[in-house]
Length: 155
Image (cartoon, rainbow, N blue to C red):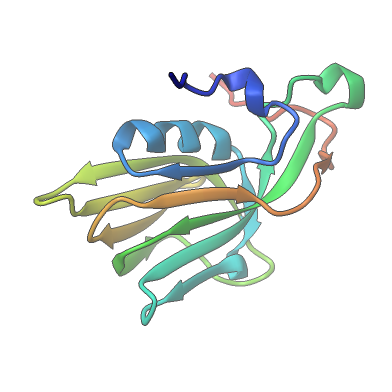
């Protein structure tokens, strides 16, 4: 008999997650909220139908922030089976820092749909996909958050 993984199981380990359903994507969305990245860290390979972003992700899952302070980690967010990419309010240069607010999926017919990456400042990245397949993988060790603070949102 197998049991589902628990949130606590991954607390101090590198994340490696895959979303194949909307509910899975909600988990990844929560983990990439407040991730930041330079505009030039996005890549779309039409021949491979793959879109990727190298993110500096806040470690929301951290089990011991009181021990070492708030942390970030570099992670790669990959969306597979991408047919088309559209951006709004996104500059793709190294001097522009973008911040992720959320990921969402709008289902279409036969498993196809649209992955929407909502960014702070009214920016958005829309990805038409043949099927939902999103992965998030940590690629570095955690490091102290440069701000020394947990991200916050004014109410």
